[in-house]
Length: 371
DNA sequence: AACACGGGGAT
DNA sequence: ATCCCAGTGTT
Image (cartoon, helix red, strand yellow):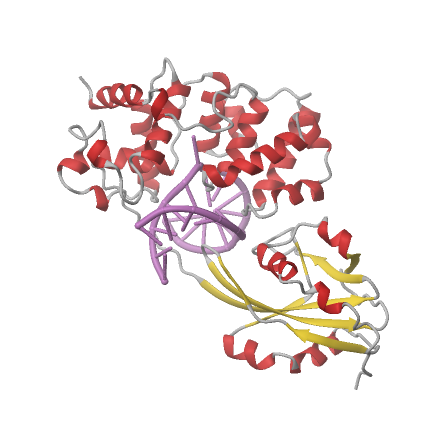
């Protein structure tokens, strides 16, 4: 018997009721909800995505509801989940399906794969869970499980590796019940064949698993690329006039694209950033052509944000200005209530949580003359 | 082929 | 600190 057949049989046998993960999108038959859950779960732990899934399905019961929603509102629901291009593509695809396809979700693998925000993994997931089509999912769980069970050393993040593991996954797939098989291998990877401290002692694959029998479990899967972390330093200017705050939308192809932020400047070293504290505010206000009186109320302490690929430090200068002024840029003046409706990066929400806006209270009148 | 893209949890 | 998570899009 083929090894892939043995693996499939052992896996499906393992996936009994007590070994299944209970998750809100399990056994879902509504393709809109399946698609929504898969987009949310990209590079996201099931536990983390859970509340977002519930939030979205409550706010947008149908794909047409999502399509009709303002993009800004959808971003607000996505706030905090990260990888914000997923949100833009989600809305784009909802509009495409609702308006161009009359609400009918594409029902072939190739058509599903064409959707923005849908790659090989998500297309296979939707095709199998939504339509019972025989396509094997390959996600982080599958790379790990297959590399260990079959003892494969090809780097999972190489082109050759992606091809090899997809082929093996196809061989192992239970074409009679692709949905159950795909669920099983991901549940197995998430609960037994975990990245750290896999539960080999109680694993039903133990006698069959090449990595276990060769004591190479901790060496698999192999990855060849290691990410380099970029350090960045920002000073944000939280500018208030009367009861309004200046904000702007991030438009660059950079982290937090399409979220809101405060006017700011980035420094190229920690040294410059620290030395600039306070003294640079006047120069910066000058550059923004703020030609009226202002009062620097406070400098906040720094807040750190650790991302996968960046380590970001930010502090904030709280500035009260005497009259509202919009330079030749994209500042928008918003009340605190309006600001609460906008999506912000976690780092900036942390400033709100620290109570920065309250620092403005009662200090609006003490305005210094600009020099 | 290499890189960019968030935030949280586990070790 | 480091790795990883129901990966995808761009260059």
